[in-house]
Structures are given as C-alpha cells and as structure tokens.
Figure 1 (tube, rainbow, N blue to C red):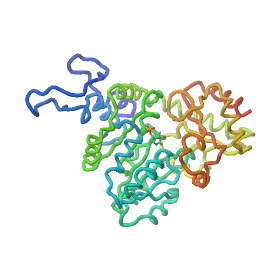
Figure 2 (cartoon, rainbow, N blue to C red):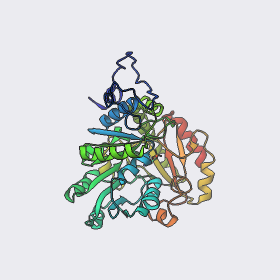
Figure 3 (spheres, rainbow, N blue to C red):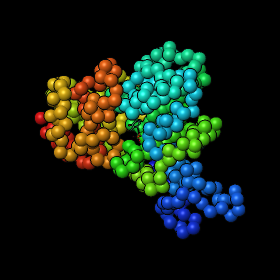
Figure 4 (tube, helix red, strand yellow):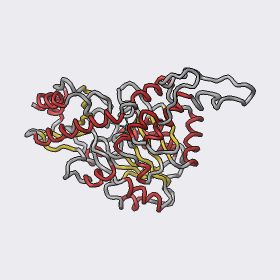
Length: 379
Ligand SMILES: *Cc1c(COP(=O)(O)O)cnc(C)c1O
C-alpha cells in the first residue's frame, strides 16, 4: 500500500460490534474478565486501550515500523528511550536539538548519571570521534529546529551499526510522509505527534516506532510502568488528523517552497534557511532522504536586531505568534525567546541561532495571502 492509502486504512477496521467506520473512543479504564486472567487482550487501560492500539498500528505502518507506541507527549516518548539506559551510559546528540529535548537531557537525565555529548553531526566524523565504550545511543534530529540543518540518517545509522550503538531519530519536522528513518537504517523513530501528524493544533502526543522486538519490549515495559500514555479522545483526534496527513503535507510543501523563494528574493532579508535551496549545505542529502522539503522555514533580516525581529513579529495578521508547528494554520515564532529560551545564549549563537532569527510554520492557507502577510510584516 502507498502512503495515502495507509494513512486512511492501515490498522483500521470497522468496529466489529456495530460496523462504525470510525474507530470508537474507548473511554474506559478497565475491562471485564470472563474468569481471572481470561480477557479479550485488554486488562487495564494504562497497558492497552483499543483506540490507542489502532493509532499505534496506523502510525507504525506510516513509518514502516513493525512496532509502534504512543505517549502523552513527544517529550515523554523521548524520555522513554532514555529510560532504557543505565547510569554511566553515554548518548551522542545532534548539537542543535529541539530546546525541550536539550532541557530533558541536560537538566533531568544528566542528574541520573547519563552523559550527553553534543556534536555537529553535519560532519559524521564528529560522531565517530565522540564514541567511547560507554556510548549506548546516538540521538539525532533532522531537519533541525530552527536552523533546518539536515543530518544524513543513513551515514549516522551506519556508524551506529558498526559500533553496536542504537540510533534514534526525531522525525517531527519531516513527518512520516516526507521521511522514514527506519528505512534508512535507524533503530528508533520518534515523533511529536502534536505537530504535523495530528496536524490541527488540538493534541499533545508522542510516538516511538522500531523494527526490533527487543527494543519494542523495553519501550513497552517503560510505557506500562510509568504510564505516560495518551487518552482515548486524543488518540481519536490523532487518527482523524492522520487521514489527511499526505494531503496536508503536499500543501505545506508547496506553500513552503513559494514562501522560501519569496523571502530569498526580498531586499530586506539576509538569509533563508530551507533545505530545498540548491545551495543549502546538505541539499543533496535532503533530496535523497526526504520526499520533499517541508513547510518549516527560518530567516534573518538584514537588520539583525531583536528590535527589528520584534517589530516584524508583532505585525503579522494571518501568521499567529505562537510556539509549536505543523498545524493547518500558519504560525510564526521567535526561537531565541520562545522555543529555545531554555538553551544558553552562547550555545544558541554557536549554532547560528541569533536573536533576530524568525521561524515560520507554513500552514495550508492560500499562499498569496501568506505572502501578502509576510510582505507587510517585513515592510
Ligand atoms: C515539539 C517537539 C518535540 C516535543 O514534543 P511535545 O509533543 O511538545 O512534547 C520534540 N522534538 C521536536 C523536533 C519538536 O518540534
């Protein structure tokens, strides 16, 4: 089955008791057993819920994963992967990680004796140089937020395999429509379902997929032990959102391309970060591993001051000033004071995230209106 068909049908059957075509919301915490231990596969809803099970199967299919698990947020999915490690273990991470991931690693898990090393993964030699006999995981993110750097998933996965180290990829910015890390050799794919997958800015959720039964069992043990699971209503909303994921992504990409070019040609814009440009440092890798280039764009104005950024940010009429991304409506954000405020300024500047950088999550509105809004906001 191709992607659009899987989005609508993979793992989804009409409800056997009624024929309802839409997966019911099983709002229940427990299930009646015929005899002690004799049940229909469901004993308690922290462990399993039928609405969640359908979503997990559907998302696993979209990532070409044998196993999938959903969590109460993207961060709780990430947390679950780290909880499979033991004090003393080391993790090698992409330098310009999502701010919340950086915070979770450095402020929460570092306390438990897990060591995180941040390297520039654009040069995969830096990963090899950072490997020690304690390295158990490589955590990568591509495209990165908000610099739109592209990591070569296949090259990183090859290093992982050669050194017997698991590779996890945060695939949130690409969505399963644009990129499938397991197909490129990664061991675990992670998503903030909150973003493109659910796609309507009404759910917070995370996902992990893998092809390895041992890894899946370890993740499932933590999922059930800790209980960071999404409720059935949210699973319903995510399933509903996924039915249009491919159609939405096509429009996000089309609008993104037009806006990236508009910005690049604008006399007041200094630099545009979008992997679709031929002179993007890793354009060739993006072309190889992604179906298209997505709807996330960052840019700097020639007047590179926080005042100019603030002036632009408060002038938008259609783009809404908000954190998050991947919803149907266009959002604009200021990473330095919003999504990445928890990253120290020196660390931000070192990866090119200056005070004036503006990030766009291009929605699926009519692109002419979005361009007109950008025109008047930049002035
Ligand atoms: C939003 C986001 C997360 C965190 O997901 P939540 O659902 O907000 O917990 C992780 N990684 C990336 C790239 C994100 O954009």
